[in-house]
Structures are given as C-alpha cells and as structure tokens.
Image (cartoon, rainbow, N blue to C red; front, side):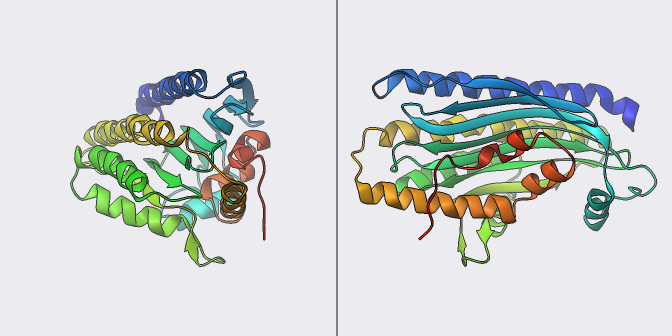
Length: 291
C-alpha cells in the first residue's frame, strides 16, 4: 500500500499547505482592513519531529483583530510507540503490532479574537496512513464567548453546504459527532456552538474511488472555512465591548483550554508521538481566566 500512496500523500500534503497559504493571506488582509495601530502579521517557524518530518507553525499575536491565531501545517512520519499502537488497534486498525509505521499530514487552526463579540474558532483537516489502513478526518467548530444565533446559523449553513455536496447524510451525522466530541464532561456542557467533526473517513467501494471521494470532501470542508468564519468577524469587529464582555471571553477561554489539554485527541497524539510541543499547544489562548 505504501508505494501506491506516495502520489496521494504528496497531493494531500500540498493541499493542506495551499489552504494554509490562503487562510494566512485572508487573515492578514482582515488585519489591514480593521482597527487601528500596527496590523498583525504571522510569525512563521519551521517545526520538526525527532523521528521524521515536520511542518510550519504560523502564529500571530497582538493583532488588531486576532489576539492570537495559529495556523499549522505538518507532514510527519515514523513508527508509532506502544501507546499509540494500542490506541490505533482500539480504533480497529489491523496489524499495528506487526508494522507500526505511519504517515500523517494536515492543517490545524485556532483563532482567539480581540473583540469578545467575535467568536473564537477551530478548524482542521488531515490524512492519516499506515501500511494497513488510511483515512481522512477533520471539521470546524465555532466557540463564541457571546453567542449570536445568526452567527451560529451562518457557520452551520456553510458546513452543511460542504457536506451536502457529497452526501446528504453527512451533515446531520458529522454535526452530531461534533456535538459529542466537543463536549466537556467535567463541566457538563459543550465548549462552543458546534460545527462538524469526522474521522476514519474511508468510504468507497474501491480503494481509488474512496480516496478521491474522501479527499474531495476534505478539500471542500477546508474551503468552506473562510466563507463560514470571515463574515462573522467582519460583522462583529466594530461592536463596542465592555469589561463584562471581556470577562466572559476570558472565562470561556478557560473552558477551551481545559478541553484541549484534557480531552482533545489531536493534542494527545501530537505530544505522544514527539511532535514539536509548541506547535501542538498552539491552540491554547494567550490569556484565560477561571472563576
């Protein structure tokens, strides 16, 4: 399976990099168009994984619009450790004890905003390969401190549009998956207003058909992100905010940090497989508060 997947791996990794470039350009344009003072710019740092591969960590801090945003891309490979092998076996991936090699590539984004009326947001898409199986995963979810029903409706409509272009069953299925996945058990609540989440996507009748269809869907999910999120930022960026609004934002960020440190599968995988810890923990907010 390895040789036939070399070209597919290259295509997937190139797409994630292209999406990263598009998002970085769009967000720097938002910085130029709104607010006062010096517009924020991304600081780009190469990342490495000791056992193979790396990527780019692009982080903007202290911008006009974005208090902190990270847009990471990675392409990593190597051999899974014992804990990761067991986790894969528990998910139904065969043969990991015989050949625990892996390859993975993806994009991961988390934005924490200056204005408390602008929602925080998360998005990622990825491809994972082992000698025994492969799949796509990803999604996007909105995390407002101050909720607006029309913003939630817009975000979900764009995610639904991306899903329904491929399968009308995708949106209700992946929305429900996001509601379950992004739930914070110890708080008894969701970390935001949801979106979509999917994993282990490998759907076709034949290997080639499945890969092309699932890659196309993953591309559409990634392409839906900017139309889903940017209009919300532009709608709320000039809304006046109070100390109470800022307090609500910081407390909500505490909830976000709790989830990512305790439950998030991507955070756990990145740290367990030796990826750059700064890149893995890019999602954490710059300032948070607990009551």
